[in-house]
Image 1: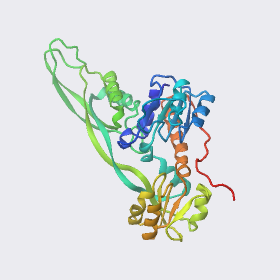
Image 2 (image 1 turned 135 degrees about the vertical axis):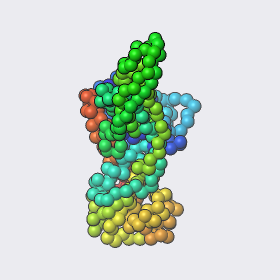
Image 3 (image 1 turned 90 degrees about the vertical axis):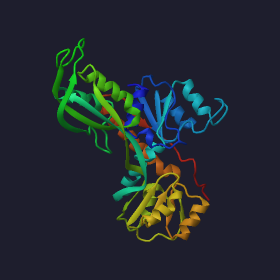
Image 4 (image 1 turned 60 degrees about the vertical axis):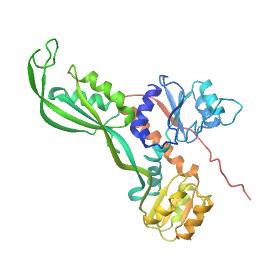
Amino acid sequence: MKVKDFLDIIECLTPSGLALDWDNSGLQAGDPMAKVNKAALALDPTLETIKQAIDSECQLLVTHHPLIFKATKCLNFQDPVTAPVCLALSKGLSVISAHYNWDNAGVADELADLLELKERRILCPEPQKLLKVVIFVPSSHQEIVRQAVFQTGAGVVGAYADCYFKSSGLGGFHVPPNAAPFCGEPGSSCETPEERLEMILAPGLRNAVDRAVRSSHPYEEPAFEFHDVTVTGKGVGLIGVWEKQEPRKKLYEILGDQGLWAGPEPGPVTKLALLPGSGGGAVLTAKAAGAELLVTGDVNHHQAILANSVSLPVYSAGHFETERPGVRRLAREIAAAIERRGGKISLSVLEESPPLRRLPG
């Protein structure tokens, strides 16, 4: 496999269209055509995790937080901000980041699984821009074309793969005199049974789908088209039913007891809101949704005051603590996608320590 194959897999799992304009997801450093036999994942692309990946003879590191987040004018080994970029490039390590797009697609789900949250729905829904490809193909070749398109990663809807719609009809056309048609005679009109195939895809897969259709379709001039589609099935955070009557015990078990509390003392909780990472801004959203407790990573001074004002208990468990589980989920989903493609790659999750800690005493 190559770096670009991982880019395609990640685009399929968590489309780049889910990221916001200020974000920087995708290939951060390296060569898309570089071969990958061994890859690793981490939450942060620090000097330590990059050294770990290099020492483990990895050719690729996939992280949640971006390697390059703000514009820089130079790459300097002595600059602590750009040193990780320099080290990765000097050792031939490619780095891919899946940041806000993965926040929209999987980070909260893993935390919800660990906390056994039921009847979940998106806490902060956001529109997702996708494409739909519509292909007209002879009935005899619809299976061949469909499978070729699926191989690009198209046809994924949520946790479901190989999704499509098919309808039957008749296709008609006039064959040019000098053509070599799949059906019909040069200089005459032709009408033949065709299937209309429709599949959803991430915008970043458009060129791959275009190539797949043209290479597998029997017509000299394949008839297919792309349409913009907007859906609202993604977003950050989750809210759902929680059966735990002792919220602190379960939270401390999963996330540790080093976090901070805002708002009133939590009582029995039956409706829990989760927003890993910097989720203190969702206090009012969680309250309006009926949450009895908000669990997030970071809460600032003013957000804590707001939580007190609206009487919503908030547990600020730490950015690292709430997002690190999502890295393990991304690793599992990438591994499953590689297996579906018939690839064999060594994939691991690197060890990391939280950058914030409490000192004893």
